[in-house]
Amino acid sequence: MIQVTDLVKCFEQTRALDGLSLHVSQGAVYGLVGPNGAGKSTLIRHLTGIYRQDAGEIRIDGEPVFENPHVKTRIAYIPDEIPYWSQASIEDMRRFYEAVYPAFDRAYYDALSEHFQLDEKQMMRRFSKGEQKLAAFHFALAQRPEIVILDEPVDGLDPVNRRMIWSLLLDDVAERGVTVLISSHNLRELEDVCDYVGIMNRGKMLLERGLSELQENIVKIQLVLPEGAHLPEHLEILHRSTTGRLQQLILRGKAEEISAQLAACEPIYQDMLPLTLEEIFIYELGGTEHEVKAVL
Image (cartoon, rainbow, N blue to C red; front, side, top):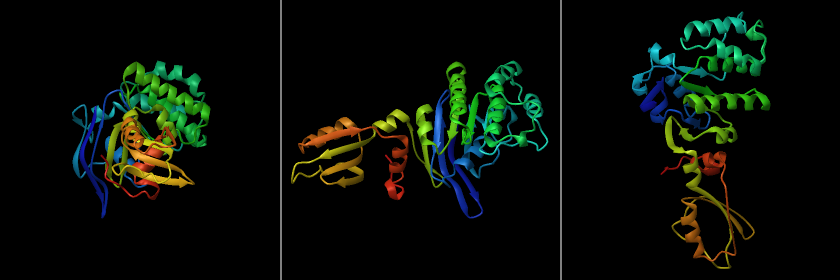
């Protein structure tokens, strides 16, 4: 569906994207994460055809995106800051979207109105940030897009509206096979909705994995070893902390294999704990010091 290959973008002396590659399958919900300055927003502006790359390719179903209106009409894009004309009402913006996007579904737009409950006559600039974000989702969903690209999508929304937005989006994924790419710092929320995760840093893609696969390959363990016992030498330890005799380890590898290795130490106590996406993100970036490590 979305294929990015060896993408490069430079701004004067800054290499914002440095040979980045990415793949998003149709019907996937893909979470794009990374620290500030990783290049996420720059990548999104290439995916939506705003920027032209210096090198590499960006294709959607085999077609380039830049200066390709046919492809762009298939994409709904909601940036962090919602664009609108200063004197435009929601009704004015709806007319604009209806004129630009051939698949805009007015009947669906009207059906969604009871969910969003925004005054159609009110000027966009008079709404709060959260209300503007709701309006943007109202327009975007009514476009009946094949691809939805979101940059900090629910920032500014209250919990009730956040849940409504995710529910409507995931309904589109389930019913129409819509592909969703989400860039967000709210990793807890991404963990609830994403199938796949891409972790970026310094303009590169460190890894792309299914979320379940990612969680299976990093393990958190608490254990107490007998006096004088030592950990096996070949464990790949990403982080280690000790409180008295209790050790907490973050290890790369499969839980079953690590348990088998630790069994040789005859631990007095051992407990495996689930890792959150936030913890995985931190340790893939090199632990608490955020030094980038080589990734398998």
